[in-house]
Structure formats: structure tokens, C-alpha cells
Length: 178
Image 1: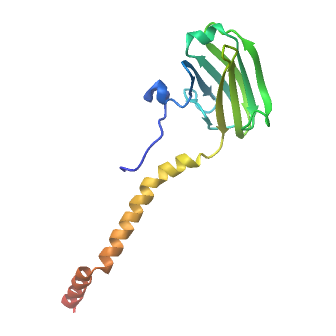
Image 2: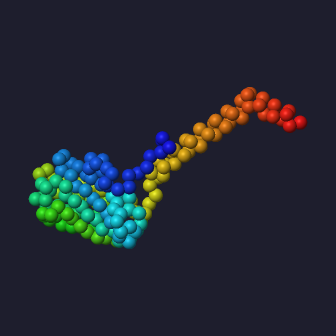
């Protein structure tokens, strides 16, 4: 259990600096939340989207300075901006309330969300999304504790069975039975 690490299930359990949905360039920060009401009415996701289908993207402009400059959003199917097909493209606009929202239907696979701010200097934020894909890093983290425990138990049993003291004890038990 000491080696087992679990993933944080909600944003409320992490600070803004540790939140993997937060992107920071210099002093400016944006935050992405993805919702799939058909999967979980209260759940929100960042980079690991559980199911293909309808997804609602909400980008929060955390820093008030970003609300006074044009912000554009592009969602690309694929993991590289130059190679993928844009499925959504919101032209740069001012978002005085600090919230950008769009809805898309996502297939299984990888996506890239690009948020650009036309400031000086221009700012670019990227979110790599995985839709309905196995995250092998999380599987490995979840499995490492039990695997190490099983290996230690196997080694201890092997050492016990090979020890002279155990063989002597086993021989004395057999001798008492006969």
C-alpha cells in the first residue's frame, strides 16, 4: 500500500499550480474543463475523456488581463496542429466574462486544443486530449504496488521453503506422525 498511488478524481483536491488542466505562460493562466453529461452528469475531465460522443469544452480565462485581448480556439483531431483536421475553429474574440464554451462530437483517438491570445507577445496554450483510450501510465501506477507486494511475498515464501530451519521443522513433524 505504501507504493500505491491513486489519481486525484476531482479538481477540488488539487491546487491551481498542480492542476493538469491549467496552462500557464508567464503570468497568464487558462483552465480547460470537459464535460460529458451523457457519461457522468457531475463529472468533468481535462485530458482523459472517458467516452467518445458529445463533449462540452469550457475554457476559463483565469487572468483578467486575458479578457481584454482577442482569444481564439481551435480543436484539431490528431496530436499535431500541422497534421490534423480542425473540427472546431473559433475566431479570436473578446470574452469579457472569461468563459469560452463550445460543444463537439468526439471520436475515439487523440485531439489537440489550441488556445491563442493575440496579445504582445502572442500566447499559445495547448491541451492534448485522449478520448476513450487506455492511459498505460495510470495502469502501471495502479499495478506497481500489488506487483511489488506479490514479488516480496514470493521471495519470502521461497526463502522460507529453502531454509534449513524449515526443513528441520518439517522433518520433525513427519517423524512425530509416524
